[in-house]
Length: 72
Picture (spheres, rainbow, N blue to C red):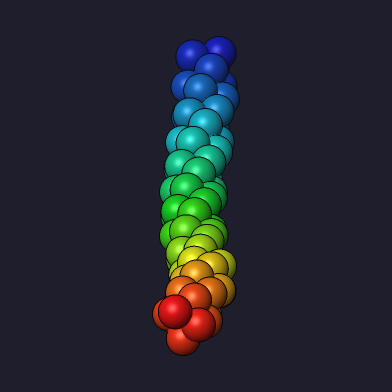
């Protein structure tokens, strides 16, 4: 009887551990996917910000050069 009870306890513990590990693996996979998406979005936002900053600088430089060219 002790062997059967021990086997049942070990079976339930192993099932619990398997479910726990599968749940952890799924949550880690979801988290890594979310983190990858966040990194891509941050990269795109940074690119857009840099394009706008560079275009403002380019307009300033072009404007100054145009004024200097018009004066000369």
